[in-house]
Length: 181
Ligand code: CTP
Ligand code: MG
Image (cartoon, rainbow, N blue to C red; front, side, top):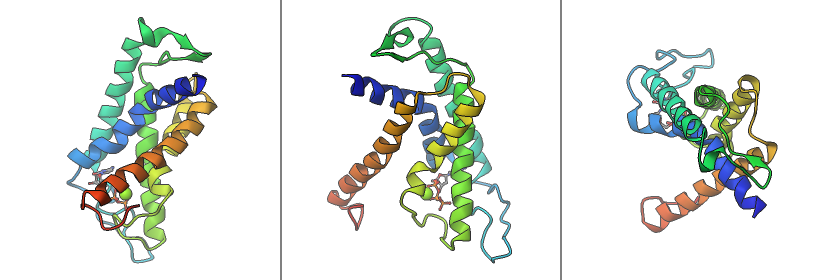
């Protein structure tokens, strides 16, 4: 059951990154981060999918999520070690680091997509699913003293695209999508 502990730890540790990446979908909008500017290639720097409001909302919820885990892990089940995996959230600002990394990773991906000639919302499999996780992992590694164990990193990198595939397949079966991926 070590693997179950690894998976749970991965979802728990990366939850602030998930929050920072998904809440802007609901509450984003308004002024784009690039202020509508174009690069020399004639395409937007980031595009209308990256907004200031989305950024602030993502950062706020990422921080909140991390703070919640920080307090909950001071005592009770989250203050324990399972199969050698320590579940304590080490830092009250961990969610802020994760959120910032997630949002910047997502922005970097949009920048790269625009340079590749992809319009806002056009998909790039792999990068779209992992951009925010890579950003979050880098920031957590740099800013938080105790980083999620490497097993969590591998687990989350596998689980996340899997979630997307399952979600897309359900969407396809439900008739909301025209392709199953
Ligand atoms: N969003 C936002 N601000 C951000 C990040 C996301 O407002 N900093 C909102 C936007 O409404 C965006 C949605 O969340 O459309 C989904 O984000 P994402 O999939 O990253 O953007 P895309 O629209 O797919 O654009 P891109 O091609 O640049 O990834
Ligand atoms: Mg996208």
